[in-house]
Image 1 (tube, rainbow, N blue to C red):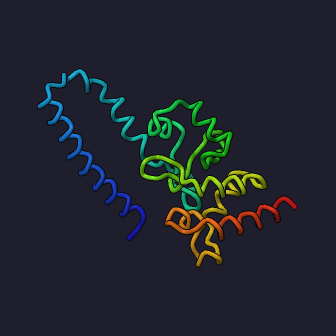
Image 2 (spheres, helix red, strand yellow; image 1 turned 30 degrees about the horizontal axis):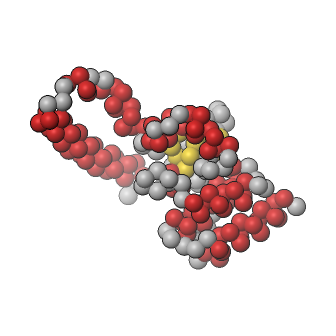
Length: 177
């Protein structure tokens, strides 16, 4: 199956699910007597819903997919400044594109939107010696010591942090030398 075919299938699945959920929401609103004006800005509602979708960039094959800052601010319900503070303190994995836009790999987030704490710890180790793209690529490169899994997959899949931390420190020391 080609990527294109699978994307079309995923879009169809998502649209069917969204149609049911939106219908259920409107039915519940009608039953509760919610005024139609509550849903008047359909453009804003659609923007908010689509903001949660990963964006597409050239790095998707290696590190992505990504959320952009607008999507992350809507998902987290915070300001751009709050996201920028997390970027500045390495509390979120963020990489800057050539056009200056920040992107955030989707694999770092739990379903609730938190950044996996073990990933943040390893990210900070790597960032002490490398730029964001190098650190993100390291997290997405299969590691022999992890049975051929990436550090991101290992950590988000419940693996212990110790072997990842050790490997990250060793590579960060080598990069800094």
